[in-house]
Length: 128
Image (cartoon, rainbow, N blue to C red; front, top):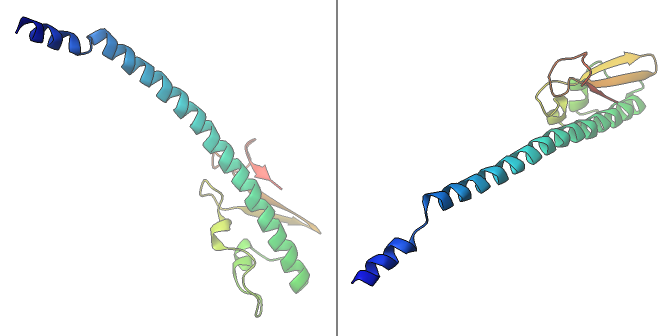
């Protein structure tokens, strides 16, 4: 009977062991969160660049098809004659939910995303 009670006492974990395991799990969780947070931001920036490339292609196709540039990006989401739309409506906003802006200067144009801070005209803007 005494051996059974003694074995039961020794069968559990001590408070120090439990705290050590919790500390290790906390450190690992912190490392994972920090790494994936940075990855998410980089992924959004890469997605924005891909969207800008798609918009640029759609604008060039629109110009070849109609002879002039679109007045707005929304014009690219409408069918041209019997052809399907050149751009999906989901591509009108960047991954942060801010609408892309387009600026024409003669034969050139600039497509701009406000970037992570959602404010146009800052250093984190993404352009073509």
